[in-house]
Image 1 (spheres, rainbow, N blue to C red):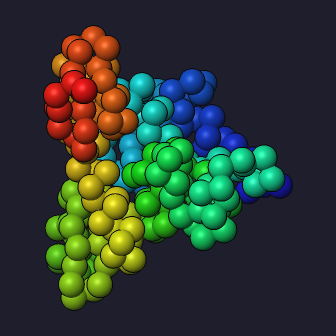
Image 2 (image 1 turned 90 degrees about the vertical axis):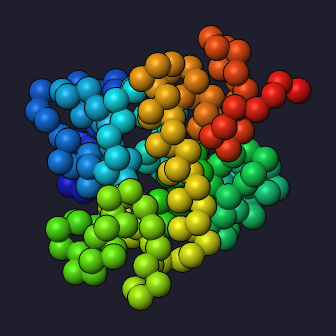
Length: 199
């Protein structure tokens, strides 16, 4: 019960809509979350200043009732900790993740960067990278040991970095970048983090 209460506190304190009087940036950098007091979020220790972008990325998993999921691909993904390309939703430990980045990160483990002994892994934790010696990848401060999940997370993280930079000029474009959609303000279509011609 104590753990459940603590988890609820973290959820409320680390989302843009939560009420908060203390800075939770340290927890948010380590575990992923939003600091209401400072008005910034963190995923894999990267700073996100756009509340809309952070909310779209959906940093944490959601409990689901598998019996209410109608998509057959999602049903298989729930059983295998997989990702449904049709619904753009992944599942880890019977919880749903609504972005590819947070789905892959959920398969990893947050690390305190100062305690990482391998110099290559520490360097990779500055952004992202794979260490052949340790046979693991770092996405920010998140360690991922399965290469397929690292590759998926690295691509999604690369797109996130583009979106964070773009959000300073246009938040609508930033959301379009991470969702492979159209910016209604600038009338630009995006695919894999890049502008593409309209269909």
